[in-house]
Structures are given as structure tokens and as C-alpha cells.
Length: 441
Image (cartoon, rainbow, N blue to C red; front, side, top):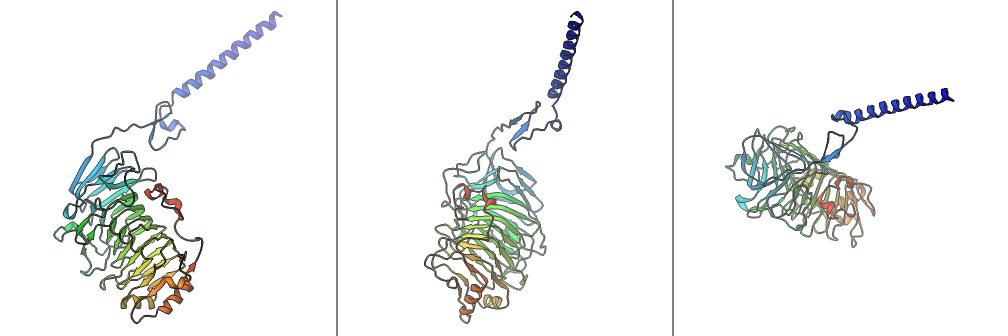
């Protein structure tokens, strides 16, 4: 009995000793987790890793609003810890880069004419505005009650417009303007050299613009001349523009003056004039984008061609997009227009809406030569429209409306449900989605 008892005590000591070693080792491991690479915890975007391997939400103290005006003379970074106020035109001049961090809010002051607030990227300047779906960059009016850290305000909707200007990006890519290979963007006086656009570099790079929402713009800058939500003048294909939104702009949503830049995952909602406006031999691709008409909207697409022989062969491609009408037309091909509409989905348009080859000899010639292609598109016919053919019109005095209707009926389809168009899942970050405007897409 005595021997057995001693052995038991010895075993208990060994067990206790072993436990202490294990406990000590574990304690040392836990307390030694002071470097991020030794932790397996993955924190959220707005959190940091503490010394004990816990995720801690960052507390960002808000800073006073910062007013911006005139030419930027050195590289700048605008951050999400303050709101930036545009006082008049703010210009990213040649050789300057403006970087805007995710989640940054920019508000335009009220004003018309020369006092209209706008952010302008001149030829040779660069804008790096890379938001994210969780932290989009918001450009809006000073009357918007959106606050730091928010994606949406609560006091304005898509019907509020003309409260400030918009975003203007100018590049060195080819254009076909009436003035030649270069031109002055509308709304900028001729003696302001930062308003020039166009050149000979199709791959010109004006920066990267992603997850940017532009709201309530289109201020009047002249008689019958308002700023578009996004104006792209001679912007080259080296520029990245993806996941951008224009809501409630008085004039056009996004207008392309020549250039070769591509647009992917764009959204235009409730503009006062045209949704996507194409001019001066724009030859890029617009794809996987959305259009939503408002009560005062005109054309979903207004398409013009080259204004002279410079870059006269440029043709745009508009494909895999979804367009929801209300008032206004599907599309108008005007003044020597050329390009392709492929595999798009149109619905919600009014009974009298049409897609028209305008009364222009150049448009008629381009159509007959195969420089206007409208194919693979799906149309949900309005209630009072009984045939797909009635949507299409050739209004040229000596044109052939019957041929146009027959061609379009053969190459496109009337449907009750979509099989083509944009991927609506890409737009959950938008103001339009927040307001429930993506129903039916």
C-alpha cells in the first residue's frame, strides 16, 4: 500500500508539472501576438489589429470642411476625414495629380455662369478617384445633408438638380470637332486654356475613376448651356472609368466628346436631357451600364457623329446595357452618326417612343454602308405598341422606312423577360439602389 501511494503522488506531481508547462507555453504564445503577421484574425476595412490580436474600430475625428477653388498647383490627396467644398471651378492642371481616397465627400457650392462649381481635369492632368462599394466617393451639392462616414443623405432625391456643376475630364485622344483636332469644352471661356481637349494619343491616360457617385448637378453656365454630370472630352483609353453614377443632373448624364475611353458599370438616373450623349466620333465601348429615365428625361441615347474628316472612321460600341424608359425616346441617330447597339435590353418606354434615323444624309449613308449596326437587342413593347417594327423610324426625306423596319425586326426581338443587358448585382452600392430605383432590372 505504501509503495502504491508514493507512486500515485509522483504521478500527480508529474501531471501537475506537465499542466503548468502547457499553461505557461500557451500563455506565452497568446501574449506574444504583438505582430500582425503572427495573428490569423482578419479585420474589417474600418478596423485595425490591436496588440492582443483583437479587431478594434478606428475612431476618426472629423476635421473642418476644406474649401477648394481655382488651379491646383501641386499634387494633392483629398481624404475621407473632412468634407471638401468646391467654390467655383477647381482645376487639376497639366502635370498635376489629384488623388481622392475612398469614402471622401465633395460638395459643390451653388452658383451659375462663371461661378458654377465644377471639378475639371485639364489635358495632362490626372484624377485618381478610387472608391469602393463600401466607401464610394460622393460628389454632391452643399445642400445635401450627407455626413462624414455616410454614403447617402436623407433630404434630397433624384428630382433635385442644377445645385452645382459636375465633373469634367479632358484629354489628348482624337476627336472630330468642327474646329478640327482640338476644341474648347462647352462652358469654359476660350481664353481659359485648361478647357482645351483633343489630340493624337488614343491611349491617353487621365487617371482612374471608380465607385464615384455624382448627384444633383447641371448648373447653368450660359444661355441654354448646362454642365453634364460627367463630361468626357477627348479622353483616352488609358483612363479607367468603372462603377460611376450620375443622379438628378439637369443636362445630360454622361457625354462623350470624341475620345476612346471605355465605360463599364455606369448608371444614369433622372437626367433632364439625354442619358448617354455621344459626339465628335467617340470610338470607345460602353458596356454593362444602366439608364433610368426620370419625369423630364429626353433620349436614353443621343448619337452624333464626326463633325469633319478628322477621326471620321471612329465608331462607338454600346453593348450589354439595360435601359428603363419613362418619357423620351430610345435613341436618335443624328448628323453623320455611326456605331453599334448590341445585345441591350430596353423596357418601360412610353407608347410613342422611337429609335430614329434622323433626317440627315450622312446618317442614311452610314446606315446603308453598314456603319450603323443595331442587332441582338431586346425590347419589352409598351402597352399600346403591337409590333416591334413600329418602334423604328427612318425620317430621311429620301430614305426607306420600310427597309429599316424590316431590318430591325429581323435583327432584334420583342420579349417579355430579359436574357440580355447589364448585371444589376454590380450596382448595389449606388444611390439608385438605395432609393429602390433598380426594380425591373
